[in-house]
Length: 230
Image 1 (cartoon, rainbow, N blue to C red):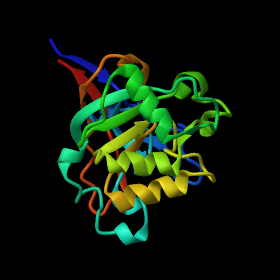
Image 2: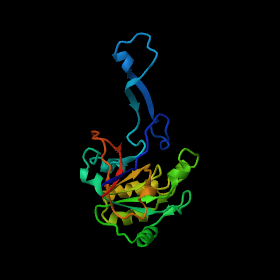
Image 3: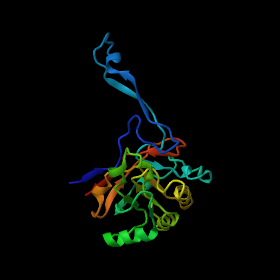
């Protein structure tokens, strides 16, 4: 029996987004009552919503063309689907405090503790408990993040991607820009705004699936990320 764990946030009007990105808005485009031609209807049941949102909304993956203009050819629709269908591991960094950096040494130590190895093609998820504690609060933008050297170290392992609970993989105005640049240079990507990572801790390997929308020229896409245990 397979166990499937949902790793994606809900998407809804007014949800938190990274500073400067498009706000999320849902409006009712049509109702069943309109379709049925009901006059003076006492109900209004949506049949179609109009969604306004950026590609980098909620749980999403960054395309390589998001990392810098020199990677403009690698839009989300051009990236191989194999990057989004991988083996996965999840490492415990719940001891990390607000705006605390995660180093390569920290990652190596976490792997040793879990007796797990990062393999080529893996997706490596970082559990920090930031979502459970801070989502919707003033400290939601202030989570832990990777250093540049940790990002380059992950790239040297030839992973497909890594994923974080926070709105950015690095710490904004500290390491975030460089983390993105390194991902572009080394040809791997990352997921942001993940949830339920606590349910993956100390459980070893799993199948990780997070397919993006096929947005022509897109710089990223919301995903429905899942972990599958056989």
